[in-house]
Image 1 (tube, rainbow, N blue to C red):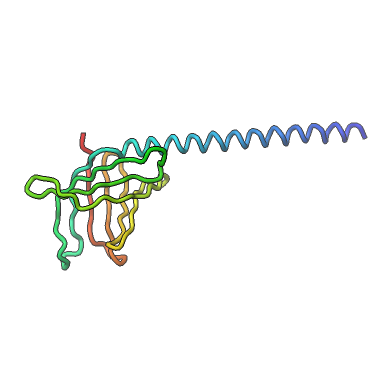
Image 2: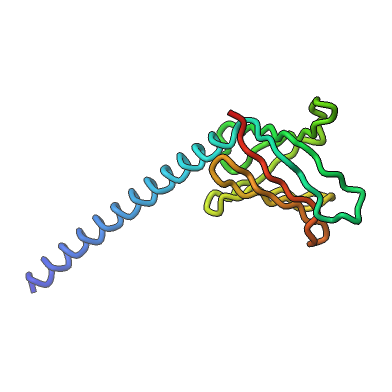
Length: 147
C-alpha cells in the first residue's frame, strides 16, 4: 500500500512540474511573439515609394507614382497607420490616412472601407498589394522601402 501512495505522490509532483513547464513555456512564447511582432512593425515604419497601377482599365482610375508613409502605434503591434500620397508635378498629395491590420504569420497588411479592400504582402524591403472592389481586382501596388 505504501508503494502505491509513494507512486501517487511522485505522480503528483511530475504533473505539477509539467504544468509549471507548460505555463512558463506559453508565457515565454507569447513574450517572444510580441517581441517579434514589434520588430516586424519596426521594419515597416518609414517611407515606401513605387507604383499604384490600375487593373480595371474601364474605370476612371489613373496609374500613379506613390509614397506610403508607415508609422506604428506604441504598444500595439497589430496595426500600423499608412498615409498614402500620390506624386503630382513632383509633389506629394495626400490621398488618405488609414489604419491597417497586420497578420504577422502571413506577412500581410489589410484594410477595408467603403472604397474597397487592400491586401498588402510584405516581402523584405518590398510591399506588393492589391485593392479589390466588389471582389474584383481594381488596383495593384508595388513599393520599395526608401533608404
